[in-house]
Amino acid sequence: MSKITKSAKGQQCQVRLPGICNNNPETVVLAHYRMDGMCGMGIKPNDVLGAYACSACHDEVDRRTRILDAQEARLYHAEGVFRTQSLLLDQHLIQVA
Image 1 (cartoon, helix red, strand yellow):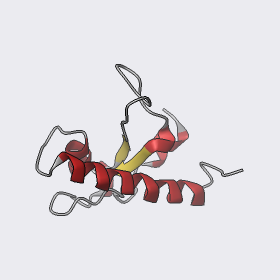
Image 2 (cartoon, rainbow, N blue to C red):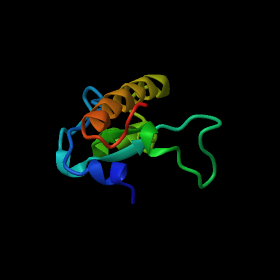
Image 3 (cartoon, helix red, strand yellow):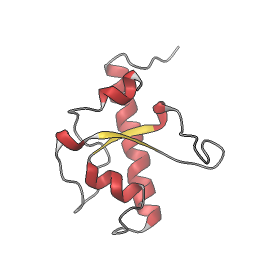
Image 4 (cartoon, rainbow, N blue to C red):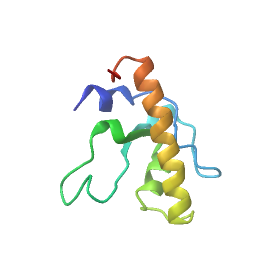
């Protein structure tokens, strides 16, 4: 497990799906954003492309639940990735050269 993956424990959800987010830091994990060319069968995207997500938001963005339109869920997930990247920079877990 990477330092970035471990860093999700106890964090606030950054995906924040309205009406879905459970706001429970105890359930937060790193939810990888999946895009063509960046992942595949058995291949996860780089941890830098992950968002801190509570269990409810993670289920929705991974489409285990289908409460929101898929495109809306993807947008919230992408915004969560950006917010998480900002937190990772603050925690010195990623750097910009």
